[in-house]
Amino acid sequence: MIKRFNLLFITLFSIGRIKYAPGTFASLITCGFFLLLNIFFNILTIFFISIIIFFYSIYAINNSYNSFSGSDPQEIVIDESVGQLIPLLAIPIYETLYPLPIIYYCIASFLFFRLFDILKPFPINYIDRNTEGSIGIMLDDVVAGFFTIIILTIFFFYFGG
Image (tube, rainbow, N blue to C red; front, side):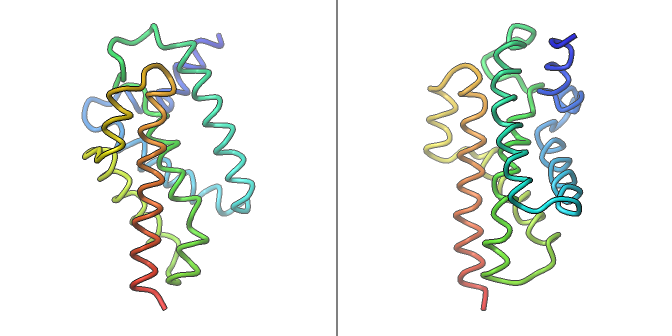
């Protein structure tokens, strides 16, 4: 029972089994999930939910890793979800730099996160190639999320008020 839940969790309820661009769909759904959470909770609560998702993801990947082939199976998309949550959690920073409706920050976070996740500039590519297991699966997307925060903060700082 728990293994079945773990498989559903790390594939983001079977989004990872989509044939084309499962990571992109997972990131997009995460943006929608964030917007929904943002209606009911404050950013600190969403941060703690994200931390719980991160740690449970590592546990679930470790316990379900043998069900997949390869070192970073494309079916596992919870890493994209966690990576996408990181720049979304920085929206209060962006809002102080350049006030816009929250949907614009979500779109910018989505686009830049996907860009970094796909292109994998250094050190993301180094982490992706040299870190194994659940930490390796998660860490490259976490770093891509932090790269997104840096770029968006610089962008909104220079174009903001």
